Length: 137
Image (tube, rainbow, N blue to C red):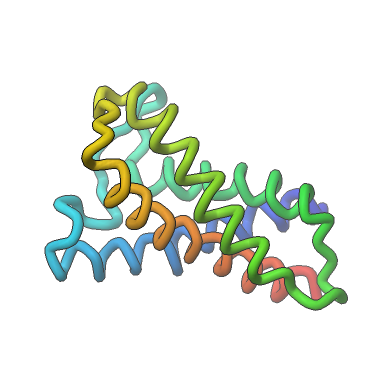
């Protein structure tokens, strides 16, 4: 399996094992109104939401790990992965994805949405490094 394929797999698995379980905890405590592992179809391909999120997690992992020039032998750049996931992915979600899905852009909700997004996407970034490190050894 090629290096980029392993990067994709690491991000895909990080959604399933880090992002979605944390979303489940936030949902269980009433922080977010939506449950993890949703089977609701997404636009445009009609994939279940969890599968769409995992595929996008794989795409973002290829970008993040390539940008970080990450190598399994080097000490893991945990802070960079946390910040990349927490800031880049959350920024794209809030500024591009949410408006495209009709969720709007309300400045009053921005701090809370950013914080929740930072937690979820930061967890994804850390999880991606955990899986990348395991898969590339």
